[in-house]
Length: 148
Image (cartoon, rainbow, N blue to C red; front, side, top):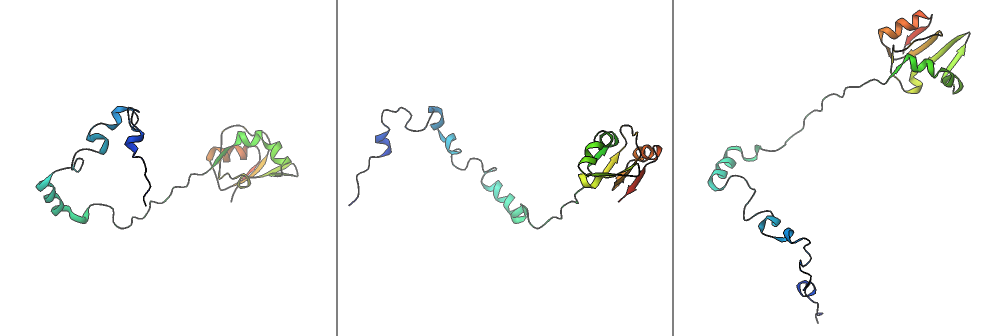
């Protein structure tokens, strides 16, 4: 035996909008996407000629080889190295031997050394690459720029 359930319409009598929110939201075919075949583009026979012409060729089919990803090097300036050198020595990122400091940029995740700033102490810096100014400034203070 089926249970007697009240219809939604009966429950919502007197609520004015019958569960549809603002009255404008439940008005006309626009709330259902349009009348008939609305939004399908060209109509009737015109559409058939388009289907005959292009058919299944429209859309993505197959595989495209992705463009090679350009690797952007992470950089650090000489001024930053000079400023943080004491912290690097304390944290054993850089070592001090015979008055010279050995600094390996790859330990901090840097690929390239840039030449902004001044160097006052002679430092041996190891990195994947150096800018021209950085190499000049390192050599001016009797340091070394070692390419890994």
